[in-house]
Each structure stands twice: as C-alpha cells, then as structure tokens.
Amino acid sequence: QVQLVESGGGLVQAGGSLRLSCAASGRTSSIYAMGWFRQAPGKEREFVAAISRITGSTYYADSVKGRFTISRDNNKNTVYLQMDTLEPEDTAVYYCVARQLAVVRDASGYPYWGQGTQVTVSS
Image (cartoon, rainbow, N blue to C red; front, side, top):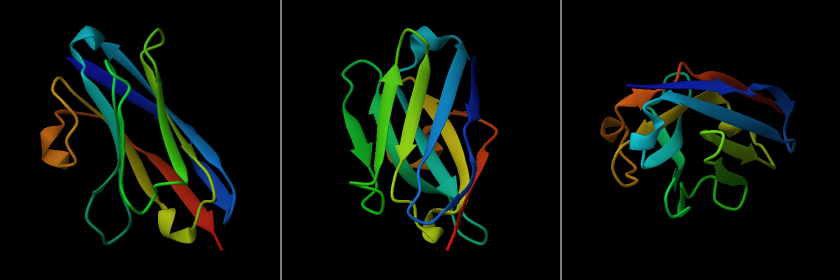
C-alpha cells in the first residue's frame, strides 16, 4: 500500500503562485508514476500533470502547460507542483496520485490518491 499526503493549498489572487507538495509513504519503491488531478465544483476530475519517478519525464494538460511545473525528489519520496500565473479557472481541489506503471492521463489508472488540497484563485 501507498499513502499520499498533500500540502500547500490555499487562497491566492489571480496572477499569483502556489506550490503543492505530495509526500508518499508505504511501499514507495513500487511507485513508477506520480501526478496531480483536480476537480472544480460541478465539473469532472481532470488530469493536470504527471512525472515518471524513474526517468523524470513530465506530462501536462494543455490548460496548464507553461504555467505549472511538476518535479520530484526521490530521496524524500515527494512530488511538487509549482503553479505560476494562476487564474480563477484553476480553482479546484487538487489530488495527488500514484501508480506502479507508466504515466497515464486517465484518473481510473491511478489506484492511490491523496485526500486533496483546496486551491482558490480570486479575480
């Protein structure tokens, strides 16, 4: 089993920045990919970004490309999401995810989820 704990959410004005962290514990050696999804009120959960813990390859949704950066620290079993130039449309609960296989963009492909952290961007 793998446990994921997110931190770093909060309230920020449009154009501002936030950095989310996700610490993994448990069978972390089995993890191949980690990433982030988000869900806004009344909307479906959507892929944001993901990273391969082995190769460091990164993947982004078109809506955040150029504004968000995902990175990892394997020594700390932690993944980060640096969010810059935030927009009100980025307001959502952000979830950290992990899986033992290669990165996919489908939420159903991730068996491990964190509890979520709220990000609110005011206009």
